[in-house]
Image (cartoon, rainbow, N blue to C red; front, top):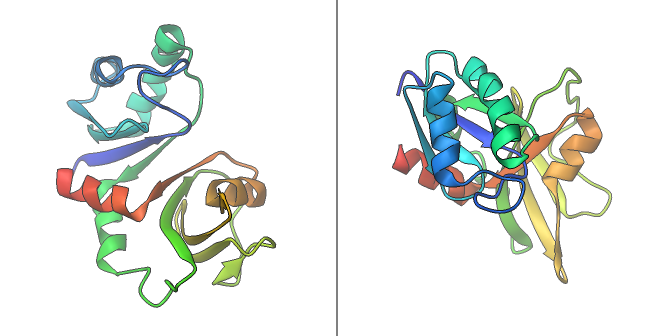
Length: 177
């Protein structure tokens, strides 16, 4: 897995207005320099084999704008780093009867998060339980029809774009790779 990375696109829904379709997503990333690009699910999660993934993603951005009007953020992480986080069983001891989902929120930005963990938002529907470089692990609760949004909390705290995936998505992604 040495050169495998994952690109987490924010607000990308393959085939919907403002987002590329699967073939375009993969073709544009390969044309931008990736050895391979395999879309995983339809939520803008891509397994990327590239020597310089940040450069590939940056070069692909203009083509996504031209082809589909997509201009949102993308966060790149090493597949090995994600596997290492999972191996540590980060959610053990943090799930209770109120837990709706366990999540990974990816963000880039210059403002560090200096939170005493676990941290709970004012609405009591998001607990940030761990922080890694550009990654917040959270549990969320759902009250009535509204679930907590770790993406909104991280964006508010950092002033930078963020995107969230569930624990199940990350586990399936590691298996897929």
